[in-house]
Length: 286
Image (cartoon, rainbow, N blue to C red; front, side):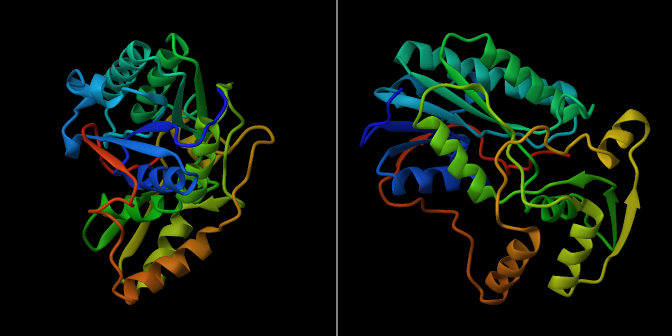
């Protein structure tokens, strides 16, 4: 598919962390984003009413939809339903490229959430619409999201090696893929350096001036071995982001102290919002 000025690209989960960046990058590239998100009226899990109209004239779909769960059953149900709904509607609408954000290591780490991402990839492979899948590592925000799941004075954090990447850089790669021809499974995307999640959390707390006791916990069995080993690190020579976790952290703390609010409510100019899909926080699981 040759990119053209003004081409329309639908973004499933376009109000989430990466989705908002995808939308901004599309606008900057002179393309017309069509935001699909549950908060705007289209629930892709329960049939996608209104989706056919939303995809009218759309050339490509970028799926960054997400669900927050550790249950394999719930994860599989969500990602399979969303993938099938988008692909079926995309086929009817003549969409020429379906792009999916997935996660590095989902075939090596037996987490329940990852089972859903594997099912999503399988469904996309079996669809009619030409496709590309980008597996990326956890985002820099993952440390913060992990803390949010364990409120209280004790922060129980799983031992895990990761190579975190900036969500903005992930969005840039997704847009580049969407504007080009389908590539199937693409090289994995990761950040510039390997980190320990426990260390990331401690640095985050220290930078915020928060006093919480961090309790590292190794997950049992093969899952724990994969998480503390190379299970969630990239394989091969794919692209590497340039922004480090410490750079992200410094900017995050500056923004918080400056009282600036994160861009949430209103999208960038030039965005067509469709009342839509899932907009839960992107987490890249772990």
